Length: 347
Image (tube, rainbow, N blue to C red):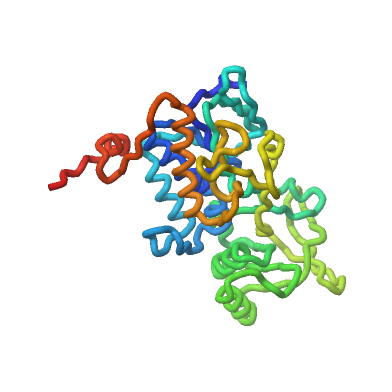
């Protein structure tokens, strides 16, 4: 194992609330490292709906999940947070000196004074295509997310799913891929009505195809996936030639190892004190969708509020001998210096 990384704060979760937690801690001169199980920052905003509009971020009439993430990353740049992505925190335990030791699935060890759990509804894992042995093609011909759309140009694509992601990508690839076949277990879709109407129009004009059924088997030649067998509700099976298979069954949130850390849990959510957003264990805070309290609303803007209060509570926990002053970014020279901006002169 590598030498342990020592820090003031660890944030588990790089979604919008976790990113804003970096900002609020930075204003209070608390340095943070961020750990997330996904390979990129942004959480479910980026993983589930990077191009979908969000309308309830204060002072931003509309932005996409990706735009929100990009703006938050820009906002926290002055604080130099270090990111450790594509790994899950698998253990957390109190040290003799009172600090918290965390270990990740990539064998990294952290020693932190405080921990913020901003893990949404847990670590997201894609719901997979359940065919024996199909996992051997993951990242080669079987994909659960798309990072480079150009990689699928002029390919025969089979897309599985009936939600926004499946339909959005199906519509995107029409005219770019050699062929697009959408498969869903029933002729009922949980997607934007406009997308559903467009998909049906393209099917009617034979620009793409819709199959109602489920993948039940596959064929290979020379270790390459060549066909997917699709069986309909009547038991009829059809063989669909493929170059690539894209699966959008959604992401399955799992509380995972967090459930074993001794925290008070109510219906798979962490119980917090709303004055501090501290959990049942001192020095461990929970913000965003992972926490629960009377009146809780699962909104990004609620998570931002929680992150601010949690940061002040953590500052008092870390420095009980100091009085933590509330300062305003509009007028505080100290905060202007931290943000790398010039203090305005008010006349």
